Amino acid sequence: MKGCEGSKSVGAVDLQKVDRYRSLETRAKLYDLVRSLRTRGMSYGRIQETVSASLESPISKGSISQWVRGIHKPLGRVNEFNQTATVELAYVIGVVLSDGNVNSRKYDREVLLSVTDREYAEEFRRCLGRVVGGFSKVRRSEKRNRWIVQKRSILLYQFLRRPWSGFKPFIEHDTKCTCAFLRAFYDGEGSISGRSLTLYNTKLDILTYIRDLLGKLKIETTELRVGTRAGTELKDPLNGRIYTRNSDCFSLRIRAKNLPQFARDVGFTITRKQQKLEEALISAKKPMTHFAPSA
Ligand SMILES: [Zn+2]
Image (cartoon, rainbow, N blue to C red):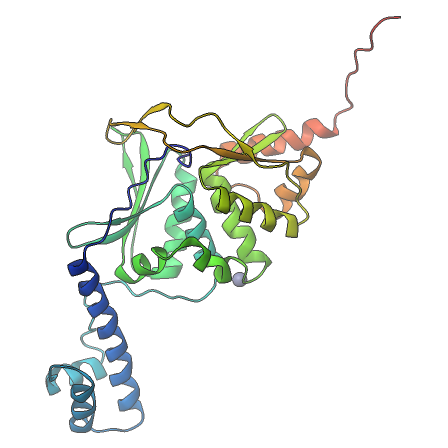
């Protein structure tokens, strides 16, 4: 759970870096252009003219030939990114808006998840594989007591850096995508104790949105509440630095009567949370023991 810790480190991207990955995107478009011109039967020479004219600098016939034959891709080792609405992309979005991080380093743009539950990391890895392709694995850090998934992809990075409301079409694509998004978010920041299933986050607008999504699934919640965590100190388990929680924390609790709907439509990937949820459902079915005051 990270939502209330105020330690998300999405640094400012300097202009030089922006230009570097914008040029990559341009190259990706160029690649598509070359391939489609060739498919339409245009000669290498004509493709070279067309493409060079649309660019500031001329492009060699050699690279056009290599692109056409698929020997070299203009993005080199950069992973491709499939930006179609899928359940997997919805899960990735949910992770990134809760526990995940989108980082920019000197030469890398990466998505990172570092968590205590292995199956959560595994599910994120699986979904990344469907969205970006290529190979990634879940790594264990004994020192940090964490399962870690790291995926380098400039195109995914660019996509995920948009303001969160830009994800709505992908989240609301269909009920399955909505449920996958919610499951990811609850895996990250949902907390269950007894029959109390609560979501904590510092961003009021995101929680309000989640409340609406749950409402569409006929899962009712209590009103949003302001927590009292702002201003308290917190030690980052990864680097040992002390942070101050500098924003209010909001919480949203699912009405106990709607726990069965939540379990059926959303649920948890994380086993220990899912077990608690199932226990909550069982306890609801048991007859209540009433201790009536003696007359
Ligand atoms: Zn969908």
